[in-house]
Image 1 (cartoon, one colour):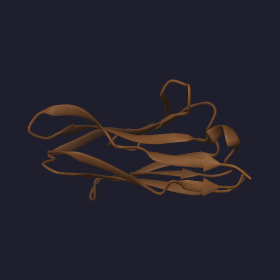
Image 2 (spheres, one colour; image 1 turned 180 degrees about the vertical axis):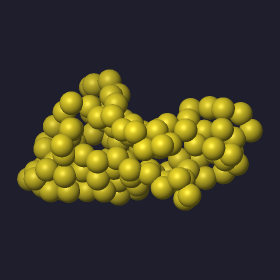
Image 3 (cartoon, rainbow, N blue to C red; image 1 turned 120 degrees about the horizontal axis):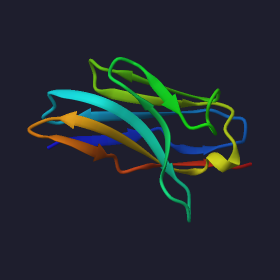
Length: 118
């Protein structure tokens, strides 16, 4: 059984920073693309950032220059450093990964709330 568990969400003032972490565990042979998505109330889930196993990244236009995605392949972790946070960044953030375990599947974490408010 493969699991993704996020941590690091919380309440932060506009202009502040947060770092999200996501750990993959279970019967894992390899992890391919990993990413972060977010869903604000009343909106569809949207891509925030993705990173390949080799480290290539892509970002939503709304977060370019403010957010940085990184990963630790040895520990099966993915991170999202969020700087210069804005109220419109408020959402539940989900970790996603394509993992080869017993089978190849896409997995989601349970989500972590990020609230940007003064």
